[in-house]
Image (cartoon, rainbow, N blue to C red; front, top):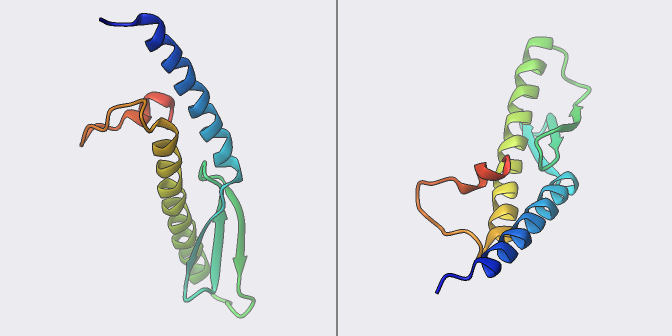
Length: 109
């Protein structure tokens, strides 16, 4: 028989685990680089840019701009992968794994 109290308890646990995972994303550091490492970017798990490092030998501003964009994009992609893994671990056993359905969007990710 359906146990409503058990389901409510599991939903509360899930919400707490999701909040913990969301907080943990602030401590995640994802790196990206471009131009053979001449430009590096670091973002947190929420894809907030934390730092950009540019090799002092780079002189052309157009090249620098393109390399910065690429490095940031790469870091953000890494952050997405890390965040997805954290959310998967946080929801393991709580949400069904249905291929093609992105349940993490229910939690603001």
